[in-house]
Image (cartoon, rainbow, N blue to C red; front, side):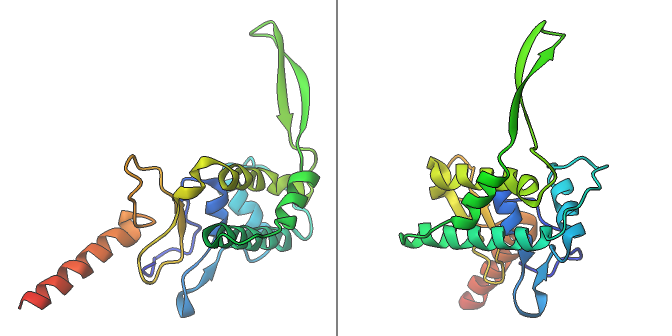
Length: 193
């Protein structure tokens, strides 16, 4: 990915879990990790619309859990791409420990009950469970074959190709696509000159 004026997380993967994977991006001197402490993970979860803006109960160790989850997701993607077996123990732990609570709740507008899902508590696993669940649904479902990595030579971002033709090549036209098209055009032009 080309140097960006911002080091904010990129939410362009079309999947919550892949957006967490993309919270570390760039290579070499342009590498940036958006998850640097527990507060930055809370900020990421808020930006991802997984927590309300007024959430303040940050559990200790959240960054370590988020980094472990992110690494496990990357390793799982690599295993799927290579066809090798992988034990997603960290992901399964978060899915189990962070399992939401389901309960009946009266809905006065419908004059009936609804089943609602609530976060079990404010533990690390409960806060990260929606990300792990999004990943589990993606990696075990038919869309797994549309997980792509940006084709720009300097980009590390993943995305879910939701285009009709499933031929998307770049994380974003604004970040990489236009730049790569211009580079290809210049290369072709130099060859003809």
